Length: 111
Image 1 (cartoon, one colour):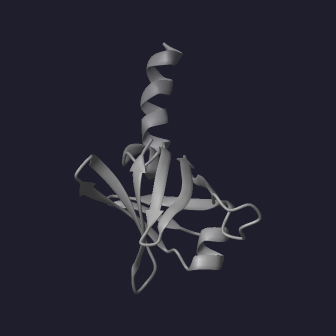
Image 2: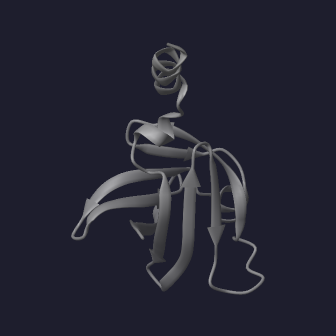
């Protein structure tokens, strides 16, 4: 009986990021080429730049929304000013567009 109660409760309290399909690993590219790997799970993210010692690499918190996630803190927000990851449709299917308040910085595709 407890199993039947616990499952619906989980779905009620699951973070919006889980529900929106942004959870997982993403390969990100900027206009200048490779930008790094982004991982989003629950309300956390990690970003790894291909350049050793790059200050953009690090982790932080996200909050899920109907069309993606908001970056609440961490290196992407502090270093590049990334505020949102918006879901978009690209040639290969799903995409996640990383944006500041004024421009699109990167396009990420699922790995």
